[in-house]
Amino acid sequence: MAFENLSERIQKALKNLTGKGKISEEDINKASREIRLALLEADVNFKVVKDFIKKIKKEALGKEVQESLNPGQQVIKIVNEELTKMMGETAVGLNKSKHIPTIIMMVGLQGTGKTTTVGKLAYHLQKTEKARPLLIAGDIYRPAAVDQLKQIGDQLKVPVYSEADEKDVAKIVQDGLAEADKNKNDYVIIDTAGRLEIDEPLMEELERIKKVAQPDNILLVVDAMTGQAATDVAKGFDERLDVTGVILTKLDGDTRGGAALSIRAVTGKPIIYTGQGEKLTDLEDFHPDRMASRILGMGDMLTLIEKAQQDYDQKEAEKVAMKMKENTFDFNDFIDQLEQVQKMGPLDQIMKMIPGMANNPQLKNLSIDDKQIAHTKAIVYSMTEEEREDPDILNPSRRRRIAAGSGRPVVEVNRMIKQFKQARDMMSKITKGNMKGLSNLPGM
Ligand code: GDP
Image 1 (tube, rainbow, N blue to C red):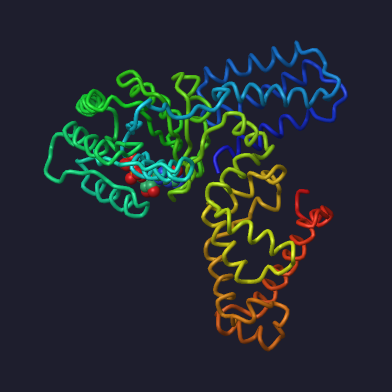
Image 2: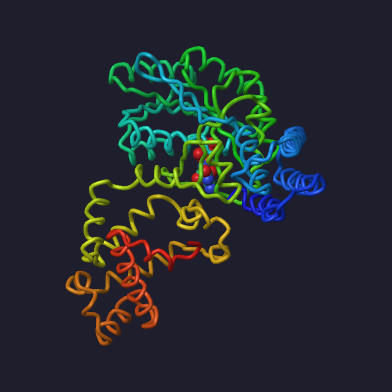
């Protein structure tokens, strides 16, 4: 997860301030120094860091003491506000055209995740706006890119416009737009070619596409893993194409995250989405305030709730809530839930959006990998229908049979059943409004 180190270090610097009755100038200087180093190591542009620290010091030292907060909390509040400002303050969405279709042109270097992101964005628009997008395959130099886009289109049941023998991309884009008009698609997303670095022929081609398509949005896809270089690339594309916004990909990786923090300040262009994994569901709206709060370990419940709304089947969720309340939640529901949650992305990342969980030491080494989930599923699939519906009948001989059937040790079967029952009881308590059930959760 990006920002892990940064987050840890900033929090450590701030921790020394909380609990203090009074904060001296020396305390602020010390914390600022630590934050400054942490930001630089996270690959944030040094000029951006300099401005940031200057503002923090000025604010922290000049601030009238607010009675409701202790001095340490006040500094945290200031850091939170300034981090948010650094990333652009408010969330920015897509430019919408007055007439359909709204046209989105994706640009960026090769390998940054452009084609994947076209698919993610199409999925996102389908889910959040019930949109009917058309995708145009404009990366004709890499035959695999056209196939990749077609596969994504099949998966999402979204049409992909391509022309096998046409060498003029601007012509393909023009024809694709005519097709979208005919089909009354509400969005058109154009995938374009990338190179390993910015070069003249690429820029000329993109300019020609821009002229033909007159896009409402030119979104620059930037790989967060490239650190400092990402901001230079962004500047280069922006100077030629006047991009409208940025999509930062691979924020799920082991990146230092500096690009997210500096791109807005360096280019003046907003980050609109972030890519947080390879799956089509792994795209999030970018909210500077929520990202700041994630960095400061304060969790991000809003994004978590939105993800749940987007990827969860509402009817299914209501059905399950009812079952929890009645304590009739069984292993069939459990498997359904597991699959629903898996759709939301890697579990360890989801957990970190919960306040207090981000830096929970128990989560530090937690990797809920797909293998573990596969084992759990194998155990459940080795149960008879009767056992799945009524876990209470699982006596030792049934458990031994299930262990043999699933190829898992009996202790693992026992542990899984025990955890299932505990979770079921707890959920039933919570849905009945008895919050005491929560006190057993870590971090609560
Ligand atoms: P393009 O050359 O810009 O079109 O890049 P692709 O869409 O082909 O993506 C290049 C690689 O990056 C693929 O292996 C993708 O699965 C991967 N990728 C794209 N976005 C993300 C992301 O947000 N996180 C991670 N971990 N990988 C990504």
